[in-house]
Image (cartoon, rainbow, N blue to C red):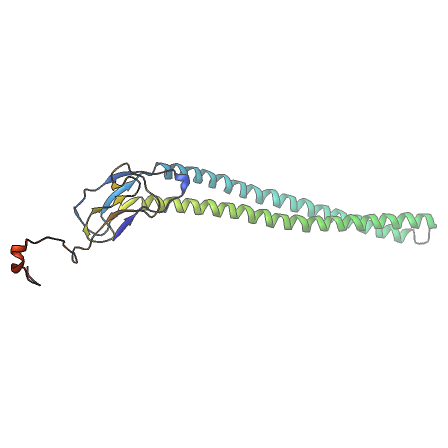
Length: 220
């Protein structure tokens, strides 16, 4: 089985291999066989946690501000409704008055109706805007929380563990063209270490022609 370079976000930088168990040792499944540096992940994780606190505070502030705005608009609607009621009463009072007074009262009624309609539309627009603003802010928080979870998982994966029982084998680093070593850097998914299955192994050997007759199939 292969132990590849774990996936990581490029904002963590180019992490190096900082610890490595000795090649050829026998390991058990779950044994630690190496360590990738976590400085970049730790730095990014700290920043994301700070960003999360700020974004959550902004969300709480948004709730308070939106509630205050809605209450103010609702108060404006109540005022507009009261003004409309007064305008209607005014219309009744000038019912038998001159045409000029009736016209003035009618204009006042129209203004009151328009004012109430504007207040109601303002409430609807504010509610729609608030829903969208909250959606955007919550999505931002979700993204930050996802980044935090990713960083925490990466921290765990950067501690390299054997996937099975076997013998630790160093693989060739394609960047250096030599076996992996402490200080090396890798691409995501690049094989670093191997754990050969010792129960099934092939041995390549050369037998002297004079000894050929001494070798048989199944011989130990």
